[in-house]
Structures are given as C-alpha cells and as structure tokens.
Image (cartoon, rainbow, N blue to C red; front, side, top):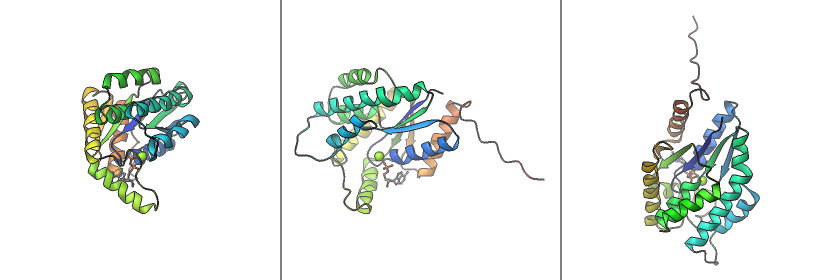
Length: 224
Ligand SMILES: Nc1ncnc2c1ncn2[C@@H]1O[C@H](COP(=O)(O)OP(=O)(O)O)[C@@H](O)[C@H]1O
Ligand SMILES: [Mg+2]
C-alpha cells in the first residue's frame, strides 16, 4: 500500500508519542512501516537539525531558516520517503511540509505562497495522504515540555520551543487554517485527550479510510 502519514501540531502536542504508538501498532499488524522526523532522517538532515533547533550565537534569519528546512526536506524525500513509498512501505513522519507553512509562514510572517512553492520543489510534489493534526493549546503543550525538561535534567527547551506564547498561538492558528483548507487530507484530533484515546481515534480513521488494508479486528467468539 502506498501510504504516507504526517503528524503535525505545536510543541508538546504529542506528535512523537503518537508516531511511536502508531508505528508499534503497524509493526504488530505486520505492515511494513518506516518512521522518520523533520528536520533529520538523513545524514544531512541530522547535521542540519542542531543548526535549526539549538540555541546559537550565529543569527539565522527567517529566510535562512526556511531554506535550511527545505534542504533537509529535499534530502529526506529523495533518500528516504520516496524510495520507501515505492517499496509500498507505510511512511510516518513526525512533522513535514505543514510545519514550515505554520512556523515560517503564519508565525514568522514569510510569504505563504513562496513557502508552498518551495515545499513543492523540495518534495517533488510528494504530499502526505493523511496529516494528523494534534490540535492543542500551546500553553498545554509547553507545560508538558517544561515537565519533560525538569524530568530529564539538563534537557531544556530548544530554539523554537523557546519562542513566545504569541508565536506558538500563531503556529496553532496556522495549522487550523491549513486543516480548514485541506479537509480531505487533514484529520484533526483534540490533543488534550489522553494518549490512548488519541491513538484509538487515529486507528479508527485509518480503518475508515483504508478498510482493505486495516481490517477491523475479528471479535472474539463467545465460548459455549
Ligand atoms: N495526550 C497526552 N496527554 C498528556 N501528556 C501527553 C500526551 N501526549 C504526549 N504527552 C506527554 O507530553 C510530552 C510531549 O509529548 P511529545 O510526544 O514529545 O510531543 P511533541 O513531539 O509534539 O513535542 C511528553 O512528556 C509526553 O509523554
Ligand atoms: Mg517531538
């Protein structure tokens, strides 16, 4: 099956958690699956990731940031995503093109049509079939992350996580606009629900969309 699923949402909305849960479920179902993340997923992307996410004295203006994300993404599509889809491996990505529209477009204020053109070139038009948006109030997400920062001693917030609350609200709004404009591709979930609930909702959406590939579990027969 040719299936590409991306996960989107503000910091701490639960993307990495849900990617992991869906990945485990597909492995259990013996479906060939590959998970990746942005920025990263290739040798080049993994070198760009700290440049994009770590605090640094080297200024990085919004346009430079946009092009660095595009460079990482072009490599990820060519090296990882497109070949996996060609081999009928389900691809799950923790962030993809919509992150750039939400962060660099709606929150940083760069021209949305420029971003969309750049995304199209960088990905060679390779778009997710399904995008799960974990719609979450950024205050909730950032609080979850600060508890993570406290738990993992020495692991503070990264460069984007440290942006103002106003910035993250713009990101959320950007995602909501994207979901409204692409209702067939987006599946919006309330990110405040508990992890297992959200996972079940995502599974049901997959079963609803692709009943042949994700059959409903056969109910256990009553003994006697
Ligand atoms: N639905 C949820 N309810 C409560 N806490 C959650 C939920 N999903 C994830 N978390 C917790 O919130 C933190 C951030 O989750 P994570 O998956 O890393 O978010 P993201 O990848 O979107 O930044 C983690 O500590 C995670 O265990
Ligand atoms: Mg994450």
